[in-house]
Amino acid sequence: MSYIVSTRHVSKEYKGKEVVSDVSMNIERGQIYGLLGPNGAGKTTLMKMLLNLVKPTSGEIEMFGEKLMPGSVELFKRIGSIIEYPIFYEKMTAVENLELHCEYMGFYNKHAIQEALERVNLTSVDGKAVGEFSLGMKQRLGMARAIMTKPELLILDEPINGLDPVGIKEFRNLLRILSKEYRMTLLVSSHLLGEIEQVADTIGILQGGKFIREMSMQDMRSEQTEYIEIVTPH
Ligand code: ATP
Image 1 (tube, rainbow, N blue to C red):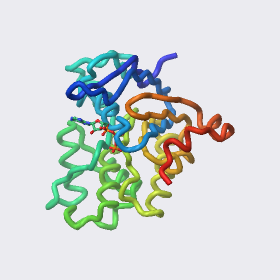
Image 2: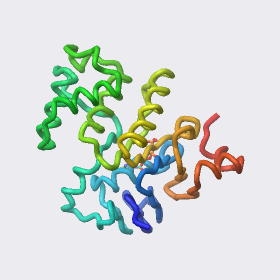
Image 3: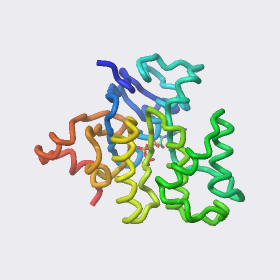
């Protein structure tokens, strides 16, 4: 089986403290993979390692079947991501920000910019500076930027933060579209099972840096598992 993402015994230490411990995880092409875990579980650190932003202390990572190396720049043209809070030029409009990103990526396509803005319902705010956007609008613009080049893999760190209930519903629909129509593989983190269970095919659970379980959503639903209790704050 060839995987889009494959980690083998990946760990990360900060000042002698292991924040990601011995994680072996595989994501198949076309999957929506939910990475679930409470605050501080190590989700962001794991995602940063997949994006080559942070170097593992030990273990190996393969992306698209290629071993991730410090100079693996080309691989990242195939990946879109939102890690932590998306940052924009606040005095520029949404379109100007996306145009700038296109330039940086060496890709310019006016149609792709419009299509991405339509997908996230941000066409009506054109002309407004991004500094005037709400948190939810910035999250949606971050999503437009991440999907604009139609990457094969999209890595989204807690993308639902800042969205209202309507926004969350729209976001889930967007994930389905990206998966079904654009055939993207998606890795989406969350600290709440309820946010991603409706769309995820597989769930991996991180707790205290350890990967405690990986299972299909179907199995999780039928199992009424105790792990749901562990990760769902009440
Ligand atoms: P959250 O949902 O709160 O963002 P998370 O699951 O994404 O949590 P991480 O952000 O990966 O978790 O953090 C895991 C642990 O690693 C935390 O205890 C955090 O304080 C620590 N950590 C993360 N980055 C660093 C760093 N650069 N230096 C030191 N410790 C760090």
